[in-house]
Length: 100
Image (cartoon, rainbow, N blue to C red; front, side):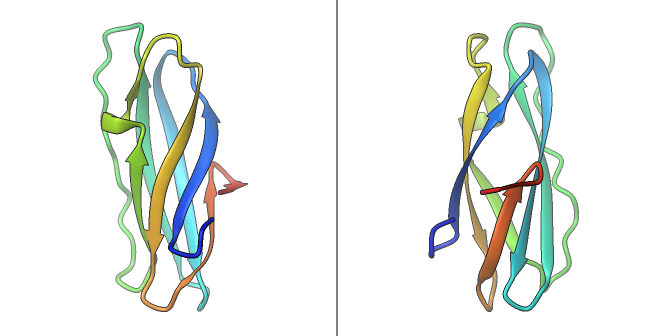
C-alpha cells in the first residue's frame, strides 16, 4: 500500500460473480470493510456492488478498477486497484485476507 492510501492486489476470478472483500485498518485500530462483486463475462449475469456499512470513524474504501466492476471472458485474473482514506492515516489494507 502506498503512503497516499492507494493499493493494488491481484485476484483470481471465476466466470460470473466474484465477491471481493477489502478491509482497512487505520493507525488508531478502527476497521473499515467493503464488499464488491466483480463480474467476469461469459454468462449473462448482472454485476452489482454491495458495500457494507462502515462506522463513521472507520477508513473509507473505494475500488478504482476494474472499471465498472466487470472483466472480459478471458480475464481469469485481475489486478484490483483502490484507495483507502482515514482521518488519522491508514495502517493496512487487505483484499480477501491478503495484504494489499
